[in-house]
Amino acid sequence: MSALQTAPTGIFELQRNSLSKSSCAIARHKYTREDGTATSSDASAGGHEEANFQDEENIDESVKEDMKKLEDTFPGIAYRFRLLNRIGEGTFSTVYKAEDLLYDHYRNDWDVFQGRQCEIWANPPSKRRRMEGESGQYSPTKRRKPRYVALKKIYVTSSPFRIQNELELLNDLRGCRSVCPLITAFRYQDQVVAVLPFFPHTDFRIQYRTFMVADMRHYFRSLFTALHSVHKHDILHRDIKPTNFLYNPEIREGVLVDFGLAEREGSEFTGTCICGYPGYVRRSRFLQSYYSTHCSNSALSAGYPKNDSRPTKRANRAGTRGFRAPEVLFKCTSQTTKIDMWSAGVILLTLLGRRFPFFNSTDDVDATIEMASIFGTRRMKTAAAMHGQVFETNIPTIGEKGYSWERLVKWASCVEELTDSEKQATRLLTGLMELDPHKRLGASDALQHEFFTDPIEHDVEWGGPPEDSADSGEDEVDKDDDADEVAMI
Image 1 (cartoon, one colour):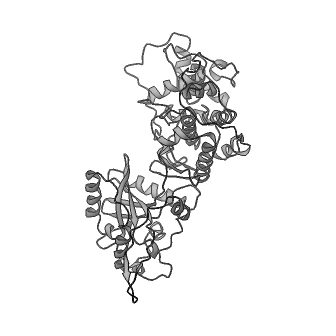
Image 2 (spheres, one colour; image 1 turned 90 degrees about the vertical axis):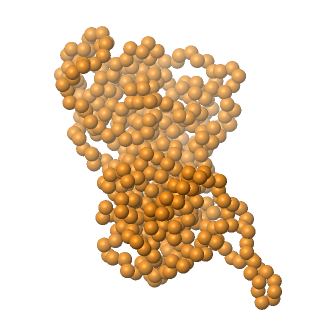
Image 3 (cartoon, rainbow, N blue to C red; image 1 turned 135 degrees about the vertical axis):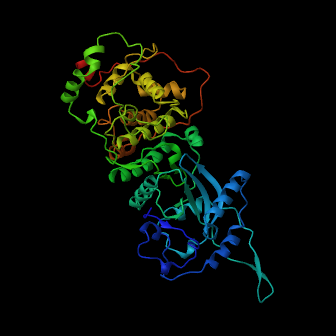
């Protein structure tokens, strides 16, 4: 873990002039005085008093114990940060909201939204102390506004390589718009704490119920801007979902967070997937496969071989259920940045359909069936063959053809007709949720879509399900799809 600054006893004593040259650049971004001089830890004494004017948050006792445990096991952290609450808990980390007690002592070039956020997300009036002056009258003392950060405690069960990878990627993305910057990181023994900016935002469970199309436009412009910056560095986020994009509707900006599963494109190379070959090569390999020579003309198989001698195909399956792209489900070994664009499309579908979560599968098999019920068996077979896989199902409700996205949005949102602006957003959705990753829109392409460049301002508020639900009759897609490789074979 040489990429982190270790935290022996007394790490938080502010003697920054004595830092060795071998200290990581990640840790120096935050703790550099503008005048280059050392400071005293006594400067934090006033920080506690100045933050006490806030109304105490209602914190569960278990959360208080958790924060107390972190302060006890990580020496000196209480002198630099005042832990306020636990704001997130995941598989690999826990995130706390904390006040940066020594904010004013260092350069804070990472704080790009602080000015606007302080104006919009104002704190309640403070209870000011009064100091008696020479005239015998009391005057209010000047207090600074508290500055908040997010402390991400990474669990010790995470591999050192994974932790270092996340911090290095965040450091490389420093300065990218709409991407959460890394302030610094500390390590004490086997504990790692990353210091990140705190971004006030609204809960997505409110957004998907209240957002109109104009709000969605601002939301996705910010999200695609972040993804464009990330993908330009050949980085796959791998876990795009609403809770990892903190959106503030007041300033119409959001930040992309949680790069714990992110990787550089091609870093886990396990062989080129068949989808990377030209079409004629894919057709030739498919014709030579066991499925084509023994099973393609027979009835659906009753199951799978008990003793299958074929080696298991291994591929990266990182991500969250319901947001994984089809190539991830089909174990593609040549995954690209397009997997993030599919996940962004699922968020757009959630907002348009007013249903969260939209996909609610328990495993990859159920997720594939959910896709098949939308796209139909013919297109799913084509998508599977593109990655050297076979798709079969005997579920009678899944037809050969699928349904249009416009019809699905109508069904999901319980409306009889979409507005012009919703139809325009649905056309963007079609480009994002494309089974073929080569035809799927990239971040830069999405920003050039008519949804952003030539928006239709025909918007109405969603009033919930009407009394008479929309026609639920099947509306199969009649348009001819692109050449179906399975049909050609």
